[in-house]
Length: 241
Image: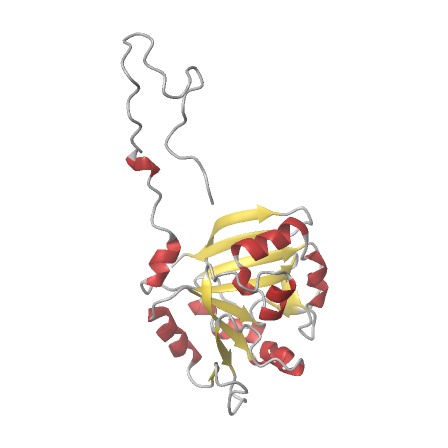
């Protein structure tokens, strides 16, 4: 994000003009200390303060898919300024095939370099003959039923998932993208540091919830909100611990 910080040049005199009262040359402009931008959050994440971010598409009434988990009906909203947002600000949350389709296959990872997904989400890729759906990221799949990885570059987490996430958070790198689904999010509910909710302008009435877990009140604070021309609203919340 770009912007002008620390004031603006006056429009009353041309650049480089002498002072009309004293004839002295103009002072040399020195950047104000206030113009120095703060250290970006990504720098903090790179020294071990990694966050687990649940970044998910959701209906107005809080469902991430139909009763069978299918969410293909959300895809019709991926266009216009919302698509520009996805490809420009967080291209790494798109599957590798989608990155190629939208022409951002070579885009650098901006916020995340690791993804955790559940068995059902991973199976969708396997059914299409894809063993690394997010080949541009370090991939982990949480599953107690998979006996081995279909791809040596994909890590299967069959043991203590919470402990594995704690290890990942202590490593250097960018953030950790929790892809879902609901069961995995329910298991990691207490470990989620950030919610990125892409709310689509549809009501489902029933379906797959964001978290498949018991009743529990967790407080989050709104960090940002952005609305797009197609009715999609992206809200980012941080956990209040």
